[in-house]
Picture (tube, one colour):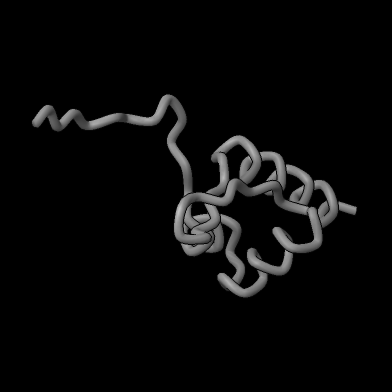
Length: 68
């Protein structure tokens, strides 16, 4: 049996990781995902994963809103 490890081309974040980077709760991240404010992928088992670039975009948006 050949067992190869596949490394994804893109690192992904779990909602808890994104929440920590954004300074909000995991529940807030899930709400943003459901509302379409934060794009997420659905992995096997229903686990949501977020691209770091999408978290960075949201960080920038939140910083601009806070500066107003």
